[in-house]
Image (cartoon, rainbow, N blue to C red; front, side, top):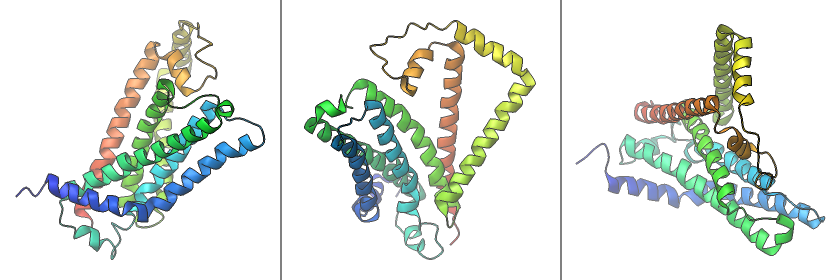
Length: 270
């Protein structure tokens, strides 16, 4: 018998946690949908409208809130000195618990939230198409949301690790630790810029952007949002390098957080 991973055992724990999902997190999901509905309807009732960019930003904000709170809401007691015993005694391996946690928090929660918000947005659009201007089920909108969700998954992995590390005030302590990490990275970049020389760094960026093609298609870019900004600067060499560094950093942080979570599940002392 494989004590590390067994597909039937993994399906069993994932199915168990999905069955308990509505009880543990259902009200939170419904509340988020209700808030988004008010965000759409209230301006329409007074004769206003809601732009596509505003709706995308709101959907991403709502999704971020749900994803960040999910680990402590769904698995907040797994490292509790008494309540956590039920979790540690589950007849599944540490890897299966970790993969189930990954599936429930990162995949299932993200899909349920984003899909629910998009469906709600589409229903309101079909009722009042003139007020919402356009649907969000377009390649451009979905691409923007997909890029943001990838970033949110990395941030969520930090909160999953924080949920396992801290015994109480999990979200608040994780936010403080994340702020500390951001400050540390910022100081590291400042040190690098100081060593290179701020004037040299400024000249490098100035040269890169001076060669940028500024022929922007106004019909495609109505509002210069983050996604449109990426389209404008995507061919700049230094931007490509920065994006490569960001993707590597994101992968290292995400993998590191989930590896740390696995180790804490395995070695947690009750």
